[in-house]
Length: 351
Image 1 (tube, helix red, strand yellow):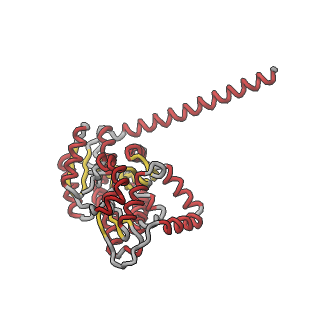
Image 2 (cartoon, helix red, strand yellow):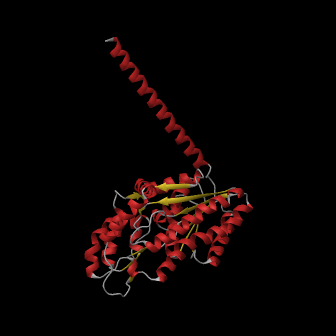
């Protein structure tokens, strides 16, 4: 009896010690996260692609931390709505339309930021256009557009801001890339190719500018529930492509709440982490691809065969957002309705 009683006491003490250590670890992590976030207070944050979607979600987080924020996007009306949204949340905000693929427009936007906010401490790039469809329905121009909207809209602002950051002793840069930049996703080939290039640029830049006191974070998110699928470019059998991609973009099992993702991204930038993969599905998929590349590639090939086939007609169909024909309203209505709350929350409303 004494032996059994002593054994139980040892187990209880071990469990209590483990719980205490676990609690201490969690408390330490929370304290570090709080201190890192506090280091951002008052920093001027520029978000390219910050007028909608994940960029807007991040802008809201930075405003809550007391950061003046400058955002830009291609659409002036959307930029103004985002500006008012952030001002209502107590933010100091500069917002403007800017095509980040155009060096001159980027320079004008940064001049506006400096004139109104005085400096740039943090740059985040997250502008992108998604093209969805089989390779048979893609053209050279589709790949060029993907590189322009993804790679160059990241490179141009980065190169423009480096002299500014060097001038005041450092800063932080974050590139929001994608799981598509680590795993080649079927029917997203042009998008993946451009995202792979962006990941390479971001990770290479991390090594090159550390000497200047500039921290570069490569952010790799999986699917985010922002409603952005309504603004994708669809190719091939556009009705079926819209249906599968839209459904995947809002499925809780494989997509992530955008606000929670934005919080993790802000924490990574605050902590000056070199790389962060956001979302458990993304972490699991990337780990599988890196550990078992052959097996994963074969699985992706099987997945591709389950996706919509290219139409027999060789004419390439290229449509932006969900169309308004009766057939398409019927085919994708459920996906549209399910994602409407995200479209409205993150300014991805259909045209």
